[in-house]
Image (cartoon, rainbow, N blue to C red):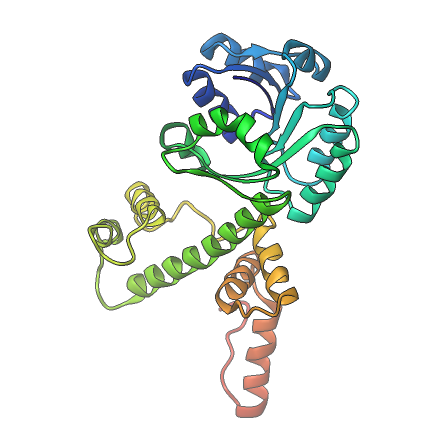
Length: 301
């Protein structure tokens, strides 16, 4: 197939390479043209200097896939592409966007006859070799039209039409919420091991657990790699960002009256990681001192 791919970050670049290896014709655009030119020189993509050039290079009905940050950047590019595309063309949003925004984008583009799919893409920097698990929302006919692209991007059984518009990003949102909880459980377990009386080799334990245990996983394989590179993780600051999906998952759980304590607490622990010295912890220490005379540690200590 032909595809226009906009946004050449780590995932966008690797997705383009995987599609090119699969025999597709890929026209790429990036805000900085140098990245597009590198893909053209090294892998045979066609580099477009403008959105207009990208659209004109593709044959109708066109397929344009956005791999941009969710929110404002995606909104702006959709607005810029709308007058350039024609009825019957397909626009795919591969950002980790809020599913409600995807429903709105589908309505916005549908008014111009432009078909829309929301695609939650999981695979990170490993997707180039292992494939991208892709969760799609939209109508079945549009899904079927772009299926050759999805088949190339994904590992076997690694893509699915999850439901109507917004469903793909909804499933990806919950996927990432679950990921928060799994990561937090591993993090707490390894900290208990490290603080114990035993001098554990955390890399070897990670490897051991991946040999048939019930907690084996790809995340645990990545933990093994991290401990191999830096056994004490001394070069990493314990500051953990969140990209939004965990917050949306927790809010959705609240709206649906679904208890989700693990995901909620894992999100809260990410907030805690960003505090050099938690004020709430200071209050706790002060209260213990006030009611029980318990010793407190001073700033100097």
